[in-house]
Image 1 (tube, chains in turn red, green):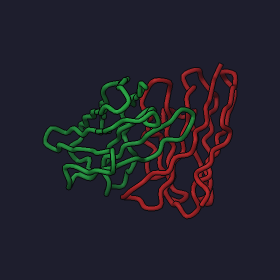
Image 2 (cartoon, one colour; image 1 turned 30 degrees about the vertical axis):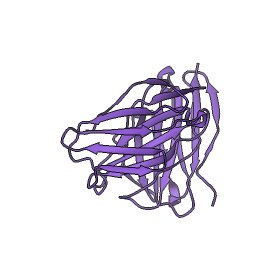
Image 3 (cartoon, helix red, strand yellow; image 1 turned 90 degrees about the vertical axis):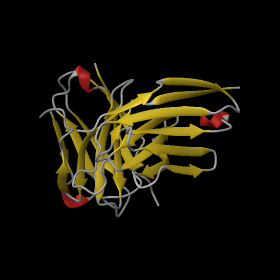
Image 4 (spheres, helix red, strand yellow; image 1 turned 135 degrees about the vertical axis):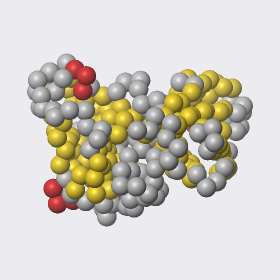
Length: 114
Length: 114
């Protein structure tokens, strides 16, 4: 079984540019989560999809961030325009069941905004 | 919302000794407490979890204890080995509601000294 995959692994962009991160969850996992870790700080929840629907997006920092999961398969997280404080590692995770158990994380997409 | 505090931020122990990492949470409704291990450059992986209906859980050299009254839980690693060196994250959530996003602690960098 393939794990959660994320692309790109590392992206370096200038302030004001746009970046799109992609996550492919484990096949059959309806639940998909985005988290972010800014250097030295905690892993913070951004949002949660159940299939193609946004179940909870309370962690999204502002309207420069847009997440989609069309068709309920892979998800994208777009940052437009990027700011310096958006730098960090963006993790995607998926799980099969909503109310139990293990989250399977991807290896993360490191975003550096210069 | 939930707030998770984790201590210490860095822990250095001699190989073979025990390591203890402590977390507190604020939301008494939280009922699921996983621990994740993240080795350098790799994805966070679940190592052990505990639900609020039990006070302790063990898996070989790893154990987790939960005190619901005090709202704290701890990770215990005995007979530490070099491969235990990593960043460990505790997390808490209410599992059973509509929003299932974990709230993570800031992480503990565990260093095993040979």
